[in-house]
Each structure stands twice: as C-alpha cells, then as structure tokens.
Image 1 (cartoon, rainbow, N blue to C red):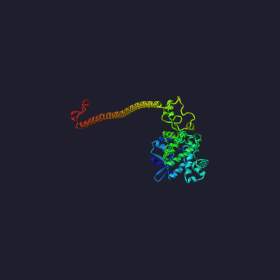
Image 2: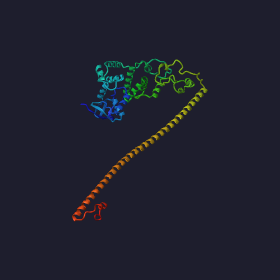
Image 3: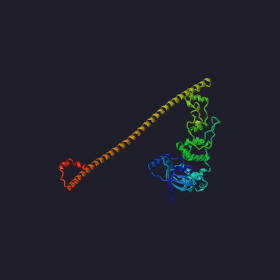
Image 4: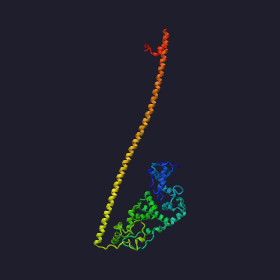
Length: 431
C-alpha cells in the first residue's frame, strides 16, 4: 500500500551516501523552486523510514528546490526500510525519469554496486539492470578494477634543485588523457579520498563536482593537493593550490630577482619568476625546465655589491609607498561608498515614512467616506421621521375634529364655524 504524506523537510536525511549524482544541477534547482512557488505539483520524493529516520532515496533536486522556495514540508512516498534500502533504490533512480544522468553519474552507480560485498558478486547483466546502464560498461569497469588503474610511471626529469619534489606526472600528462577516462579517474579518487578522510558529505561531493564542471585540469590539481593533506576532504582554495604548486618549483636567484626588477616585473621581486610561478595550475615541463633564460631582460643584470643592494632597497621602499598610497585611495573610496550607502538608507527610511503616511491618509479617506455615507443615511431617516410626524399630526387633527363633532352632537351644541376652526384648530377649551 502506498503511503503518500507531507513530511517536514528538516527530518529528511540526505547524508547517507544515497546521492548517486556527481554534482547537483543548480539551474534545475532554481527552475524547480520557481515552479513550486507558482503552485506546480511535483511527484513525491521517495523516503525510507527506519524507526524515526527518513532516508532520502530519490528527489534530491526537489528537496533542495523546496527549501529554496521556503517550503517547510514536502510530499513524500514513505516506504519501510533503512539506509541500505535507500542506497539500493537510489542507484536505479533517474535512469528512466528526472534529470538526465551524465556518464560520471552512471559510473558512480556501477561503482556503488561493485564496492558492495553482496551486490558486487552479482552478474554483470544484473548489475547493469539495477544501475540502468549497458552491460558493456560494467564489463569495462570490472576490467579496470583488476588491476587497479594507477598513475603513470614517473619520469626521470632533471630538476633545478634536488631538494624540490617534482610535479606529479599525472598533472603534466593530463592534457593527453581522454576526457571520459579523466572524469572516471577523478570520480574514483574523490570517492577514495572520501573513504580515507571519513568526511564524504553530500556538500563535499557537490563542491568537487562543481570544481570539475568549472575546469577539469584545475579540479584535478586541487584533488592532488587534497590527497597530500591529512584527513581533509574539502576543495582547496586558489591560495592553497598555488602554495602547493610553488613547493614543486625552484625559487628565483638574486640575479633573477634583480633582472625582474630591472624589467619592471615588481610582482616577482619576492616570489617565483613569472615564467615558472604557478599563476594557474597549467604548468608543463617546458615551464619547469626552460632552455632560455627564465625572464627576458631589457638590460644586463645589476652587478652584485652595496650599490646594487641599496638600489633594490630603494625600489622596494618606492613600491611600499605606492602600495600605501593605493591603500589610502582605496580607503577613501570605501568611506565614500559607505557615505553613499548611508544616504541610500536615509532615503529608504524617508520613503518608508512617506508610504506609511500614505497608508494612514488612505485609511482616513476611507473613514471619511464611511462617515459621509452614514450622515446621508441619517439625514434620509430624519426626513422620513419628519414626514411621518406630519402625517401623524394630520391624523391627530382629523381625529380631534371627529371627536369634537361627536361631542357636540351628543350635547346638542351647534356646529362650529369651519372658517374659525381653520384659523384655530385647537380651541382654548381643548388645551
């Protein structure tokens, strides 16, 4: 029997490695969220209830979209089972509905089955059926696992300094890799890093997937950096990546630094020469071991000595002064921006006060309109009461005449003069 109900999103667990996709599609999440705000009904997500824990088996994008749309609950198909049942269901989800799976997503689904002691013993055809892939992919991936694909054999490359470790050949040869094979290797090593560190959260996998989508080689470089860290799963920053690359490159000599200053390359004075500095992770052997001079000189290097040292110090002092001036200018611009922001805030508050006053004026106008309508209704009722009073007065006069006539007739008194009666309808004896 299907159990469809609304489940609070905060009770849904998404960190049980039931996400088979390498990365979430942020564009799809935003599109789903807008549709949910407009009232579009989506299919229920699939949850597996283990005592009081709801494991998400299918619907990661819908859950993220519901949260982005400000929803507290989500429609769910609740089934009995634990984390393992949720993982098994997730492996076969989305191969016939939902967002189209990438090749990396398909390989990850097969990897999850092959890594399991029970599922990995199934036939290739059964594994392919569950994962929703072609049996040939399972055959290929099994062949890749025995023996495990390793890194290319290191080359014997002369280094400028024997104390520096060489860059891994994986990075140097990355451009020659097939894109699909590179993606498979990247996904396998990210999975291995997650197992090694024990920090393989959905957010972490999504971050690695986004890095891969942005730049394959840059992502692989960051993965090499992460693999050199002890027990950390996060994606390294640009600064951490460049620092790691700099450890594999020789530092500039005094002559190279002086040449850089002479050429105007001020940014390389205290760092690595521009030709070998890791401005980006795309470093090849030609950059590591240039045959020509590292930096082209506009003039001959300054001769060593006190004068050379004093000249470099003077140039460094000028650089410091220039940077201080630039910093002062930036501070001034920030202060001006802050003043503009304050002015905008003041204008915003004034606009709010005006809007509040307009709301009060609108309410007052409504009250005046209601009072005018009540006054008109009261005036009409007053006129009606006046008319009713006139009618009652005429009726009273008529009945008074009839009574007087009857009284006179009874006593035998003469009839009154009608003209006198008109002039004084109420004689003194009747008052």
